[in-house]
Image (tube, rainbow, N blue to C red):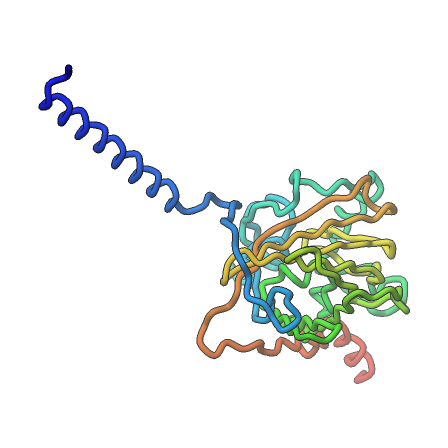
Length: 294
């Protein structure tokens, strides 16, 4: 028979081990998630039972400068502007890091980058062929509108429509939920048809104009451009955004981008105006006015 004093010591050791194990489990459970990993989240609902995406959202990535990994780079005319307009360094938002261009398309992408700050509106052949559409204050298209350095608002209710309003150029698009109709004509922001897959809003985007670019690095698409977006709330303060992109005329296979969108939480935060047309008039049309003056 084991003496009583040894049984007491053994019980105390076992209790100590159990306490240490329990506290260790609590500590592990309370560790914050790793980057890119999110604990289960039950999103608040609107009247129709779907997750509430209403709010002002903004990306903090640098994909508008270049979707790939990129170094900081000077802006146009650094001899005049210095660091004003310089591009920040950034990490790729592309799954796999590269866009799978066809050979001819990669050459065109490189030419686009070389000509990104050139404009010529003297003819239909050069009007859209030269210069980044952002430079000329064109509506940015999808998915570019979601990662420009400007916020956008989602307005969602129980109607069969969701409105997305963007600060840049005051662009908007309407997401038609469970809609079957095709795009009636190409447009800068395309034709958006939405559906719910569980708690994820899925938007199918077609009918975008082929003159749109994806970033300032000259990445582009054709009239067959097709984007499938996915918006998933993962906390009260941010959602994950994914876009699967395909265009058989330009790319060798579909490819995907992903990044978080953050909810703007400032008191009384509003979506303001960025009507940039007046900023471009001299650049685009100034030389014609000067000629008329002569």
